[in-house]
Length: 174
Length: 174
DNA sequence: ACCTGAACACCGTTCAAGT
DNA sequence: ACCTGAACACCGTTCAAGT
Image (cartoon, rainbow over all chains, first blue to last red; front, top):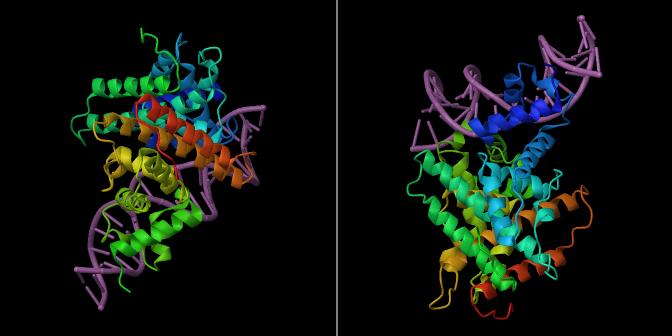
């Protein structure tokens, strides 16, 4: 099997899930593919763009939503579905790398102001960043008492607050 | 002048401002102090705790606020007042390192729900993370057209939306 | 065209040895 | 007690050389 960009992204994604962003190095990706690190640079310009491709894969797993509240929930789930996903996506989005912008799939009510999407997105990213870090620390026993249900509740309350403040009716979270 | 924890934190803070988080290494801090890298470990347990101390310094620069809207603005200003400050503080807070919690200084109206503080904080961190990254990329000419006033406007609108949604009256931003 | 091997300029952290 | 020097096990990236 010849090396390819897709294979490299897939291998990187696997290392992310198994070992985390801190251990996701070009050398480790190369090892997983049975190849020298330098070979990767024939298919990918640098590590940053590889990470952006992994971030795109994470965001590509978002399911379509019928309401803004559902969209927010799907966004959060996508971020939390891969180890360190929130951190990776937040940085990829901030740098403007990557092809996928979740705000484009958001079901903004007709006549709605698009600013609410940015407010929601910042809350979602900040919230997921915090929750994911804490959940991972708790899983390692380095901090006690992270309650996942409580985190979801606080998240939904935050989303509801923002939608209420923007004058958007809150549909069921189905 | 003998090496000390305070001197190390100060040197790290200077390197952060001058070269950014990516170039803030233990070896560089040691160089700035005219000392070997290993010497730092006599005063600081590891890099993570040094970064947390720098994050505390950043948050320590927050001015007192009379309203939640002012508190949010002061929080944002503190994050943006040092290079990569938002990224550094976000990760320090998520890991639960550091001594300073900005939410403790927040003037929550009597009878107000503390959940709004978490919602506000996540928005502030997510928003500052994005704005600071973009501003720094624009300063390097790697991206065009970052409008700082527009970013402030969007931030204040987001804060206003959250406060409105939480049923808190919005005082003047003085 | 695609990959290896080796190098360059770095990392965080540890630790014997010196003072 | 405090610091040096050197090492260990790594990094991202480049590039001549091979096929």
